[in-house]
Image 1: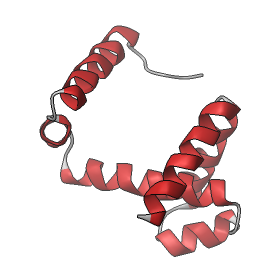
Image 2: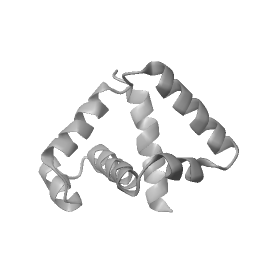
Image 3: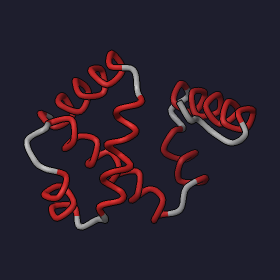
Length: 101
């Protein structure tokens, strides 16, 4: 699985993010590190993953619904295929719970 070009930097980011969540500072940290466009892109990726995992729509329909490129949808689909199935079940369960609330 591809994680990062520089694993040490990625690990440092994850450690900082974990600390931020533990101390209630996650939103501030992510606002500091990500531009508004990057935050929007993360939100879009989450919607893509959610719709792909639902398996109710074709990739083309997802692309049209979310007004994004086919490449972005394909990238999400390909990443899902590389992830541990148990993790993807956890993601789907969490996304389903978020959508109910």
